Image (tube, rainbow, N blue to C red):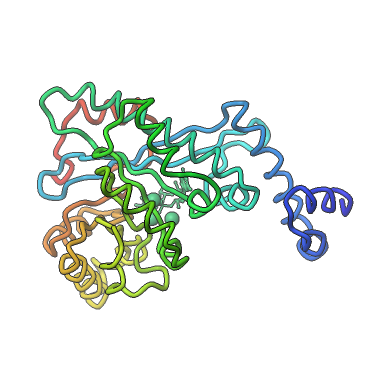
Length: 291
Ligand code: C2E
Ligand code: MG
Ligand code: MG
Ligand code: MG
């Protein structure tokens, strides 16, 4: 297995790989196996997108969805993104996977919006890895996919992480500005879990923040947690940022967020990530999810 590790050390360009394989044993072999399998996964069409509804807290209606990647592998079963995105990033495969995700999500969105008649169009949030900004011409590839699928830029939300902004790169800021000028919403995912100061955000071409679910978890049980999220909501408003609450699991949490001025929320209370077909059924149902 040391030979296998060396072989992959060359392929992945990580010369400390053999060290990892000795220290971590099975962790390393899982890592190697995942890397090799991900290469095949795109070819074998093993990736699938699930969609989690985003709900307007005032009307209780679905206003959009977040696309979340799933990998169904014959040997490994369903692999969740937390287990394979990092491997895909380190091997560079995330660029190709990311393009697949974007194309698939845009196609789904166009089909959803074609069926909406007079109702206002839904939005679709797509997660981007920082590596997608660094490894290729992301702007060109997004433009190409929008043109190809007929997806309007106004319908698309691109989720980035605070760490991307910490790269402090003019090129990245230019790309984000170009997205914003096209009408695409840039959203900061897992907001407040990184190291960036909130005041700093005003300098970037960002229109939305998603408060991480760790800030939502205890708001119904602990007064100090409620006060904290209320403060975050106020600051977001002051910075003219739209705010999405993640990980809403109860009606009580949803109501508290609504009272504090949060407009959009996402979480198991409204719906788990689901297949497109299931989302279509829920949309057709048209239920008020706040009732
Ligand atoms: P994220 O973008 O912050 O996505 C939210 C995660 O929280 C999802 O996990 C979702 O299933 C989960 N979640 C949603 N509501 C609730 C809730 O009420 N309670 C709890 N406990 N969890 C909830 P998932 O699908 O496993 O994705 C994990 C992470 O993987 C995502 O976090 C995102 O960072 C990354 N990811 C997913 N799809 C992609 C993708 O296509 N590209 C990239 N680069 N990253 C992706
Ligand atoms: Mg996200
Ligand atoms: Mg998140
Ligand atoms: Mg995340």
